[in-house]
Amino acid sequence: MTDSSDAPDQTPITTADRLLEVQRIDTEADQLANRRERLVERDQLHAASTSLTTWERERNSMRSRLDDLTAVIERAESDAAGIDAHRVRLAAQLKTVIAPREAEALMHEMATLDEQVDALDTVELEALEEQSDVDDRLTAHLSTESALRDAVSVADSALERATAEIDRELDELSAQRSVARGELADGVMARYDRVRASSGVAVAKLVGHRCDGCHLDLSAAEVDVVKEEAAVSDGVADCPNCGRMLAL
Image (tube, rainbow, N blue to C red):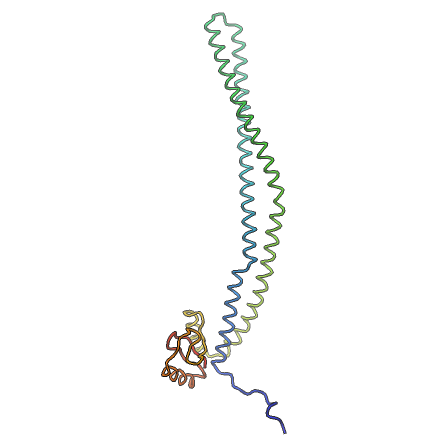
């Protein structure tokens, strides 16, 4: 004689049970998708990328400044060379001048040219000093590039691993969802999708007199109506407060 305690559980699976399973799967998928967007690895990659972008901006700024200083130095040297050539011509002309007033004018012009050369020399010296300082800072700056790029690479790999793991879980849930949805009537799933689109959670349990979706109590009369509806709808009714599908 077979012991009845050994017999398999023959409790039928209701539409309410299947809806709760679909809701469980969708809730887990939503939580995973949210976690995927909020991964600490994503923040770490953003921080590393931002640091590298800042580094690149500073590097470019220093290189641009070096280019500007080089142009200043070359222009000062060129202008000074032009002035020197002009002074040489004036000096040669001075040797041929006899009139004192003309000689005085030439000497005054040569003195003015000397002042211009001195000013250009000052500009060139200041530019050379700044160029040396910027060049030293750029050299030190470039020495940190490798570490910054490595940090971005490590953070990117970590994020890729983390998202890949979540994606695998999402793929598994997607397969489960297809099976679970396939066990429900099209009309039921259409109703589920409409409620889920508007409320996020489409299916809730009736716990005592309370809907655990909106957390509002139903009156005794409302509970009776819900139970009657569920009795003819394979355990499914509508919450009179939030419109969610109640599983009894």
